[in-house]
Image (cartoon, rainbow, N blue to C red; front, side, top):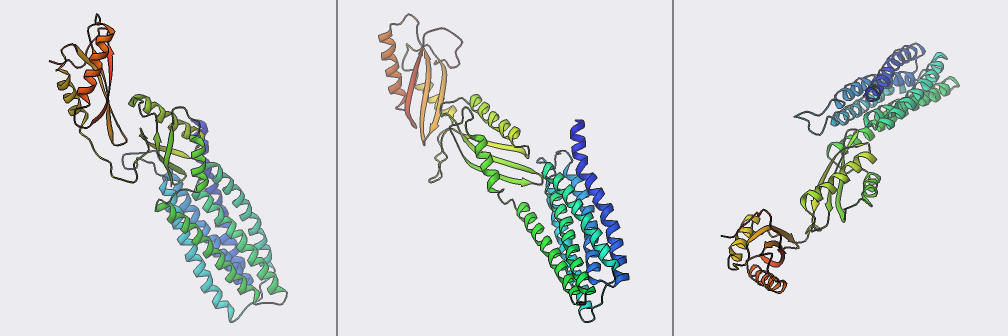
Length: 387
């Protein structure tokens, strides 16, 4: 539990660190950009300011996404990360548009920035790249999409600082138009980051299927599990940092319900153990391949079938009881297995004729295509006794 607590606090810690760094960078670059008259550096400061707000959104999303399941959120709170990522995307796009507007004002009267702007841009590149590396590494380890989105936010800021550095350098070398051009480039990078993150968030919010490599890993996990005949309709969708998986599992058509449940549980736990990102597995157990072409024909309830079987077997007085009745609804047909009790002193030939007679009577019943009769010679508690 202590390890889990440390792991859950690590994303928040790196987010707080990023918040402090972005606050200092936004203030520093904005001040230096104003003093040095660099539109590219001022644009870069705006990007750092958007990073500052994205850190707040990231912290808020992480806080709620780590809450345990409750009555209103039976699948957990992972979608808070997705909502947070979408908000960050909108903030990035808005910031990029603001940078474009600011840079347009500089195009008509470009200014050669001071040398101090070069130092500010260089320091920003180093700090933001370090933040990217740390945040992205933790995001990958924790499988946190919002941390990864925030990491790319840091990386885009580092790239925009490089663009600003190039523009400032070009302007100081006698090409003043390079500074506003770099400002436009920074704006484009910001808007592109917002669109990419927003698109990924919308895909997740609309329950788009998970990546193909995720599905392939699930299929590999199902291979070779004892009791699994076939599997199909394997699907997965994201819930923030987690995956929800559902699939159809085909088992031996004559397997009991309890045995089939054991196979399903074995599959479920195997997926959970081999894929830590999965936190929910829903399994539908089939006795045969689902009929996808035609409609499924619903037959009479088993209780009605059992009553008809008991009524039919009353015609055979040698049957002293019925121990079990099993109904198998397979391939739109009904087959029954009936265990009957007879006198243990009865001869084998008589018992065989009795079984054949019982089989004939049962196959005359509506819906029953095949009857399998088992003779029980030992005496034990009976479940059904014909009157």
